[in-house]
Amino acid sequence: MKTIYLDNGATTKICPAAEAAIKEANEKFFANPASIHHAGIEASKRLERARKTIANTLGASPEEIIFTSGGTESNNLAIKGLSFQNPSKKHIIASKIEHDCVLNSCKWLEERGYEITFLDVDKEGFVNLQQLQNAIRPDTLLVSIIHGNNEIGTLQNLQKIYEICKKKKAIFHTDACQSFTKAPLSAKMADMITINAHKMHGPKGIGALYIRKGIQLTPLAHGGGHQQGIRSGTQNVAAAAGFEAAIKEAQKQKKQIKNMQNLRDYFIKSALKIPNSTLNGAEGNSRLANNINISFAGVEGESVAALLDMEGICCSTGSACASKSLDPSHVIMAISNNSHERAHGSIRFTLSASNTKKEIDFTLRALAQAVKKLRKISPLKR
Image 1 (cartoon, rainbow, N blue to C red):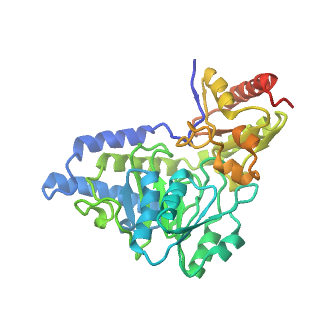
Image 2 (cartoon, helix red, strand yellow):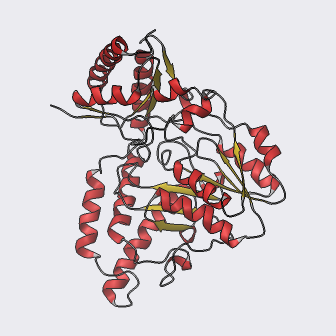
Image 3 (cartoon, helix red, strand yellow):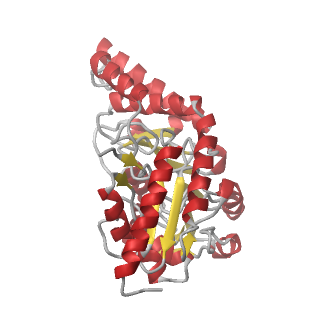
Protein backbone atom coordinates (compact mmCIF):
# COMPACT_ATOMS: atom_id res chain seq x y z
CA MET A 1 0.00 0.00 0.00
CA LYS A 2 1.39 3.36 -1.03
CA THR A 3 1.59 6.07 1.63
CA ILE A 4 0.07 9.43 0.74
CA TYR A 5 1.48 11.81 3.33
CA LEU A 6 -0.81 14.80 3.93
CA ASP A 7 0.25 15.69 7.47
CA ASN A 8 3.04 18.16 6.74
CA GLY A 9 1.67 20.51 9.39
CA ALA A 10 2.74 17.91 11.96
CA THR A 11 6.18 17.36 10.47
CA THR A 12 7.83 17.09 7.08
CA LYS A 13 10.18 14.65 5.43
CA ILE A 14 13.73 15.96 5.65
CA CYS A 15 15.02 17.13 2.27
CA PRO A 16 18.15 15.57 0.69
CA ALA A 17 20.07 18.86 0.94
CA ALA A 18 19.50 19.00 4.70
CA GLU A 19 20.48 15.35 5.10
CA ALA A 20 23.70 15.98 3.17
CA ALA A 21 24.50 19.07 5.25
CA ILE A 22 23.97 17.14 8.49
CA LYS A 23 26.19 14.29 7.29
CA GLU A 24 28.95 16.70 6.27
CA ALA A 25 28.77 18.60 9.56
CA ASN A 26 28.88 15.39 11.60
CA GLU A 27 32.01 14.34 9.72
CA LYS A 28 33.86 17.66 9.44
CA PHE A 29 32.50 19.87 12.23
CA PHE A 30 31.86 17.42 15.07
CA ALA A 31 33.89 19.34 17.67
CA ASN A 32 32.29 21.40 20.42
CA PRO A 33 31.86 24.91 18.95
CA ALA A 34 32.74 26.42 22.33
CA SER A 35 36.19 24.79 22.34
CA ILE A 36 39.21 27.01 21.66
CA HIS A 37 41.24 24.52 19.59
CA HIS A 38 41.19 24.62 15.78
CA ALA A 39 38.49 21.92 15.44
CA GLY A 40 36.23 23.81 17.82
CA ILE A 41 36.85 27.06 15.96
CA GLU A 42 35.90 25.43 12.64
CA ALA A 43 32.71 24.02 14.20
CA SER A 44 31.90 27.48 15.55
CA LYS A 45 32.39 29.02 12.11
CA ARG A 46 29.99 26.45 10.62
CA LEU A 47 27.43 27.18 13.31
CA GLU A 48 27.69 30.93 12.76
CA ARG A 49 27.29 30.48 9.01
CA ALA A 50 23.94 28.82 9.66
CA ARG A 51 22.96 31.53 12.12
CA LYS A 52 23.81 34.21 9.54
CA THR A 53 21.66 32.52 6.87
CA ILE A 54 18.67 32.45 9.22
CA ALA A 55 19.27 36.09 10.17
CA ASN A 56 19.51 37.16 6.52
CA THR A 57 16.29 35.30 5.71
CA LEU A 58 14.45 37.33 8.35
CA GLY A 59 16.31 40.58 7.68
CA ALA A 60 17.89 40.42 11.13
CA SER A 61 21.45 40.44 12.44
CA PRO A 62 23.11 37.15 13.53
CA GLU A 63 23.35 38.20 17.19
CA GLU A 64 19.54 38.47 17.22
CA ILE A 65 19.15 34.74 16.45
CA ILE A 66 19.19 32.21 19.30
CA PHE A 67 19.16 28.50 18.45
CA THR A 68 16.77 26.33 20.47
CA SER A 69 15.47 22.76 20.37
CA GLY A 70 12.35 23.80 18.43
CA GLY A 71 9.17 25.84 18.41
CA THR A 72 7.97 24.83 21.86
CA GLU A 73 11.20 25.91 23.55
CA SER A 74 11.36 29.14 21.55
CA ASN A 75 7.80 30.08 22.54
CA ASN A 76 8.45 29.25 26.20
CA LEU A 77 11.68 31.24 26.15
CA ALA A 78 9.98 34.26 24.58
CA ILE A 79 7.01 34.32 26.95
CA LYS A 80 8.54 33.19 30.25
CA GLY A 81 11.97 34.69 29.64
CA LEU A 82 10.48 38.12 28.99
CA SER A 83 8.11 37.82 31.97
CA PHE A 84 10.88 36.84 34.39
CA GLN A 85 13.00 39.74 33.14
CA ASN A 86 10.20 42.28 33.68
CA PRO A 87 8.44 41.34 36.95
CA SER A 88 6.76 44.73 37.33
CA LYS A 89 4.56 44.20 34.27
CA LYS A 90 2.14 41.34 34.74
CA HIS A 91 -0.33 41.60 31.85
CA ILE A 92 0.01 39.45 28.72
CA ILE A 93 -2.24 39.24 25.66
CA ALA A 94 -2.64 36.21 23.39
CA SER A 95 -5.34 34.96 21.03
CA LYS A 96 -7.71 32.09 21.74
CA ILE A 97 -6.24 30.10 18.82
CA GLU A 98 -2.59 29.97 19.85
CA HIS A 99 -0.60 26.73 19.78
CA ASP A 100 -0.84 24.81 23.05
CA CYS A 101 2.72 25.71 24.06
CA VAL A 102 1.79 29.41 24.03
CA LEU A 103 -1.58 28.90 25.72
CA ASN A 104 -0.11 26.69 28.42
CA SER A 105 2.84 29.03 29.01
CA CYS A 106 0.34 31.85 29.54
CA LYS A 107 -1.85 29.72 31.81
CA TRP A 108 1.23 28.72 33.84
CA LEU A 109 2.05 32.39 34.37
CA GLU A 110 -1.60 33.10 35.19
CA GLU A 111 -1.37 30.59 38.05
CA ARG A 112 1.55 32.64 39.36
CA GLY A 113 -0.17 35.99 39.48
CA TYR A 114 -0.10 37.22 35.88
CA GLU A 115 -3.23 38.47 34.16
CA ILE A 116 -3.82 37.02 30.70
CA THR A 117 -6.23 38.45 28.13
CA PHE A 118 -7.24 35.96 25.45
CA LEU A 119 -8.48 37.76 22.34
CA ASP A 120 -11.48 36.60 20.35
CA VAL A 121 -11.20 35.72 16.67
CA ASP A 122 -13.81 35.96 13.91
CA LYS A 123 -15.27 33.03 11.97
CA GLU A 124 -12.16 32.86 9.74
CA GLY A 125 -9.75 33.01 12.67
CA PHE A 126 -8.63 36.64 12.43
CA VAL A 127 -7.85 38.55 15.60
CA ASN A 128 -10.09 41.52 16.31
CA LEU A 129 -7.62 44.41 15.97
CA GLN A 130 -9.89 46.87 17.77
CA GLN A 131 -10.18 44.47 20.69
CA LEU A 132 -6.38 44.16 20.71
CA GLN A 133 -5.95 47.93 20.75
CA ASN A 134 -8.42 48.28 23.60
CA ALA A 135 -6.85 45.42 25.57
CA ILE A 136 -3.31 46.88 25.75
CA ARG A 137 -2.74 48.65 29.06
CA PRO A 138 0.20 50.51 30.64
CA ASP A 139 1.17 47.27 32.44
CA THR A 140 0.91 45.10 29.29
CA LEU A 141 4.28 43.45 28.78
CA LEU A 142 3.70 41.17 25.82
CA VAL A 143 1.34 40.42 22.96
CA SER A 144 1.77 36.94 21.45
CA ILE A 145 -0.20 36.14 18.29
CA ILE A 146 0.44 33.15 16.03
CA HIS A 147 1.23 34.02 12.40
CA GLY A 148 -0.02 31.01 10.41
CA ASN A 149 -2.38 28.95 12.53
CA ASN A 150 -1.28 25.34 12.82
CA GLU A 151 -4.82 23.95 12.60
CA ILE A 152 -6.83 26.19 10.28
CA GLY A 153 -4.05 27.95 8.36
CA THR A 154 -5.28 31.52 8.83
CA LEU A 155 -2.48 34.08 8.36
CA GLN A 156 -2.71 37.10 10.65
CA ASN A 157 -1.72 40.57 9.44
CA LEU A 158 1.46 40.87 11.49
CA GLN A 159 2.26 44.35 10.22
CA LYS A 160 -0.98 45.83 11.55
CA ILE A 161 -0.66 43.99 14.86
CA TYR A 162 2.92 45.18 15.26
CA GLU A 163 1.95 48.79 14.52
CA ILE A 164 -0.64 48.65 17.30
CA CYS A 165 1.85 47.12 19.73
CA LYS A 166 4.57 49.67 18.95
CA LYS A 167 2.15 52.55 19.34
CA LYS A 168 1.05 51.20 22.72
CA LYS A 169 4.62 50.22 23.78
CA ALA A 170 3.94 46.49 24.16
CA ILE A 171 6.44 43.88 22.95
CA PHE A 172 5.09 41.70 20.14
CA HIS A 173 5.98 38.02 19.70
CA THR A 174 4.72 35.73 16.95
CA ASP A 175 4.88 31.96 16.51
CA ALA A 176 5.81 31.53 12.84
CA CYS A 177 6.66 27.82 12.83
CA GLN A 178 4.04 27.01 10.19
CA SER A 179 4.53 30.09 8.02
CA PHE A 180 8.33 30.33 7.88
CA THR A 181 9.37 30.02 4.17
CA LYS A 182 5.69 29.63 3.14
CA ALA A 183 4.52 33.22 3.64
CA PRO A 184 6.16 36.67 3.79
CA LEU A 185 7.91 37.07 7.14
CA SER A 186 10.58 39.46 8.38
CA ALA A 187 12.08 41.02 11.48
CA LYS A 188 10.15 44.19 10.61
CA MET A 189 6.93 42.40 11.58
CA ALA A 190 7.60 41.57 15.25
CA ASP A 191 9.95 42.00 18.21
CA MET A 192 10.38 38.24 18.64
CA ILE A 193 9.75 35.47 16.10
CA THR A 194 9.65 31.72 16.70
CA ILE A 195 10.68 29.40 13.86
CA ASN A 196 11.69 25.76 13.58
CA ALA A 197 13.22 23.39 11.04
CA HIS A 198 11.08 20.28 10.92
CA LYS A 199 8.00 22.07 9.59
CA MET A 200 9.91 23.02 6.41
CA HIS A 201 11.87 19.86 5.52
CA GLY A 202 14.70 20.40 7.99
CA PRO A 203 15.73 18.20 10.93
CA LYS A 204 13.73 17.75 14.12
CA GLY A 205 15.17 19.05 17.36
CA ILE A 206 16.24 22.51 16.24
CA GLY A 207 14.50 25.85 16.07
CA ALA A 208 15.35 29.48 16.62
CA LEU A 209 14.06 32.58 18.31
CA TYR A 210 14.60 36.00 16.77
CA ILE A 211 14.95 38.56 19.57
CA ARG A 212 15.13 42.20 18.55
CA LYS A 213 18.27 43.93 19.79
CA GLY A 214 17.64 45.60 23.13
CA ILE A 215 15.10 43.06 24.40
CA GLN A 216 16.43 41.11 27.36
CA LEU A 217 15.25 37.65 28.41
CA THR A 218 15.94 35.69 31.57
CA PRO A 219 17.27 32.25 30.58
CA LEU A 220 15.09 29.22 31.34
CA ALA A 221 18.12 26.96 31.81
CA HIS A 222 21.46 27.92 33.31
CA GLY A 223 24.80 26.52 32.26
CA GLY A 224 27.94 27.63 30.50
CA GLY A 225 26.51 30.90 29.23
CA HIS A 226 26.30 29.93 25.56
CA GLN A 227 24.46 32.17 23.07
CA GLN A 228 24.90 35.42 25.02
CA GLY A 229 23.81 33.64 28.20
CA ILE A 230 20.26 33.29 26.90
CA ARG A 231 20.32 29.59 26.04
CA SER A 232 23.10 27.49 27.56
CA GLY A 233 24.06 24.06 26.29
CA THR A 234 26.41 22.63 23.66
CA GLN A 235 25.01 23.68 20.32
CA ASN A 236 24.02 21.16 17.67
CA VAL A 237 26.14 22.20 14.70
CA ALA A 238 24.88 19.43 12.43
CA ALA A 239 21.23 20.27 13.05
CA ALA A 240 21.95 23.97 12.46
CA ALA A 241 23.61 23.07 9.16
CA GLY A 242 20.56 21.02 8.20
CA PHE A 243 18.27 23.91 9.14
CA GLU A 244 20.29 26.26 6.94
CA ALA A 245 20.22 23.83 4.00
CA ALA A 246 16.44 23.42 4.27
CA ILE A 247 16.00 27.20 4.20
CA LYS A 248 18.17 27.54 1.09
CA GLU A 249 16.25 24.73 -0.58
CA ALA A 250 12.93 26.40 0.23
CA GLN A 251 14.17 29.70 -1.20
CA LYS A 252 15.06 27.97 -4.48
CA GLN A 253 11.58 26.50 -4.79
CA LYS A 254 9.33 29.51 -4.30
CA LYS A 255 7.45 28.64 -7.50
CA GLN A 256 6.28 25.48 -5.76
CA ILE A 257 4.40 27.56 -3.19
CA LYS A 258 2.04 28.72 -5.95
CA ASN A 259 1.61 25.16 -7.19
CA MET A 260 0.82 24.08 -3.62
CA GLN A 261 -1.75 26.87 -3.31
CA ASN A 262 -3.44 25.71 -6.50
CA LEU A 263 -3.56 22.12 -5.28
CA ARG A 264 -4.88 23.34 -1.91
CA ASP A 265 -7.66 25.33 -3.57
CA TYR A 266 -8.56 22.38 -5.81
CA PHE A 267 -8.76 20.12 -2.75
CA ILE A 268 -10.95 22.58 -0.84
CA LYS A 269 -13.32 23.20 -3.74
CA SER A 270 -13.71 19.47 -4.39
CA ALA A 271 -14.08 18.45 -0.72
CA LEU A 272 -16.76 21.08 -0.10
CA LYS A 273 -18.96 19.27 -2.64
CA ILE A 274 -19.50 16.66 0.06
CA PRO A 275 -22.85 17.60 1.68
CA ASN A 276 -22.83 19.39 5.05
CA SER A 277 -19.15 20.29 4.94
CA THR A 278 -17.60 23.55 6.18
CA LEU A 279 -14.21 25.10 5.51
CA ASN A 280 -12.40 26.14 8.68
CA GLY A 281 -10.17 29.20 8.34
CA ALA A 282 -9.57 31.89 5.75
CA GLU A 283 -9.28 31.59 1.97
CA GLY A 284 -6.75 32.55 -0.70
CA ASN A 285 -3.60 34.43 0.26
CA SER A 286 -4.85 34.79 3.84
CA ARG A 287 -4.33 31.05 4.34
CA LEU A 288 -1.18 28.95 4.58
CA ALA A 289 -0.39 27.60 1.13
CA ASN A 290 -0.52 23.98 2.26
CA ASN A 291 -3.40 23.96 4.76
CA ILE A 292 -6.85 22.41 4.35
CA ASN A 293 -9.19 22.04 7.34
CA ILE A 294 -12.79 20.96 6.82
CA SER A 295 -15.55 19.90 9.21
CA PHE A 296 -18.08 17.25 8.22
CA ALA A 297 -21.38 17.26 10.08
CA GLY A 298 -22.54 13.98 11.58
CA VAL A 299 -19.13 12.29 11.79
CA GLU A 300 -16.10 12.24 14.08
CA GLY A 301 -12.86 13.51 12.57
CA GLU A 302 -10.91 10.73 14.31
CA SER A 303 -13.04 8.09 12.57
CA VAL A 304 -12.55 9.74 9.17
CA ALA A 305 -8.78 9.88 9.74
CA ALA A 306 -8.75 6.20 10.77
CA LEU A 307 -10.58 5.10 7.60
CA LEU A 308 -8.27 7.20 5.43
CA ASP A 309 -5.27 5.69 7.20
CA MET A 310 -6.50 2.25 6.11
CA GLU A 311 -6.20 3.55 2.53
CA GLY A 312 -2.63 4.73 3.14
CA ILE A 313 -3.55 8.40 3.61
CA CYS A 314 -1.91 10.25 6.52
CA CYS A 315 -3.80 13.26 7.87
CA SER A 316 -4.83 14.58 11.28
CA THR A 317 -7.65 16.07 13.29
CA GLY A 318 -5.68 19.13 14.41
CA SER A 319 -2.37 19.87 16.04
CA ALA A 320 -0.18 16.76 16.24
CA CYS A 321 0.88 17.87 19.72
CA ALA A 322 -2.68 17.41 20.98
CA SER A 323 -4.27 15.00 18.48
CA LYS A 324 -4.27 12.09 20.94
CA SER A 325 -6.57 14.12 23.18
CA LEU A 326 -10.33 13.60 22.87
CA ASP A 327 -11.00 17.22 23.79
CA PRO A 328 -12.51 19.31 20.98
CA SER A 329 -10.12 21.59 19.11
CA HIS A 330 -9.89 24.91 20.95
CA VAL A 331 -9.21 26.56 17.59
CA ILE A 332 -12.39 25.30 15.90
CA MET A 333 -14.38 26.07 19.04
CA ALA A 334 -13.10 29.66 18.92
CA ILE A 335 -14.15 30.24 15.30
CA SER A 336 -17.48 28.37 15.46
CA ASN A 337 -19.21 29.87 18.49
CA ASN A 338 -18.25 26.78 20.52
CA SER A 339 -19.77 24.21 18.16
CA HIS A 340 -18.73 20.81 19.52
CA GLU A 341 -20.03 19.05 16.41
CA ARG A 342 -17.94 21.19 14.10
CA ALA A 343 -14.86 20.82 16.31
CA HIS A 344 -15.16 17.04 16.61
CA GLY A 345 -15.96 16.69 12.90
CA SER A 346 -12.88 18.57 11.69
CA ILE A 347 -10.03 17.03 9.75
CA ARG A 348 -6.79 18.64 8.58
CA PHE A 349 -4.76 17.90 5.47
CA THR A 350 -1.43 19.68 5.01
CA LEU A 351 0.42 19.41 1.73
CA SER A 352 4.04 19.44 0.65
CA ALA A 353 5.51 20.40 -2.71
CA SER A 354 5.90 16.72 -3.56
CA ASN A 355 2.16 15.92 -3.41
CA THR A 356 0.52 15.34 -6.79
CA LYS A 357 -2.96 15.89 -8.22
CA LYS A 358 -3.25 12.12 -8.63
CA GLU A 359 -2.71 11.69 -4.87
CA ILE A 360 -5.24 14.42 -4.11
CA ASP A 361 -7.85 12.87 -6.40
CA PHE A 362 -7.38 9.49 -4.71
CA THR A 363 -7.69 11.18 -1.30
CA LEU A 364 -10.85 13.05 -2.30
CA ARG A 365 -12.53 9.82 -3.43
CA ALA A 366 -11.52 8.05 -0.23
CA LEU A 367 -12.67 11.03 1.86
CA ALA A 368 -16.13 11.10 0.24
CA GLN A 369 -16.51 7.34 0.77
CA ALA A 370 -15.37 7.56 4.41
CA VAL A 371 -17.81 10.36 5.26
CA LYS A 372 -20.67 8.55 3.51
CA LYS A 373 -19.89 5.28 5.31
CA LEU A 374 -19.67 6.91 8.72
CA ARG A 375 -22.85 8.92 8.26
CA LYS A 376 -24.77 5.72 7.55
CA ILE A 377 -23.93 4.38 11.01
CA SER A 378 -23.84 7.70 12.85
CA PRO A 379 -26.42 8.46 15.56
CA LEU A 380 -26.19 12.07 14.31
CA LYS A 381 -27.77 11.31 10.94
CA ARG A 382 -28.75 14.22 8.73
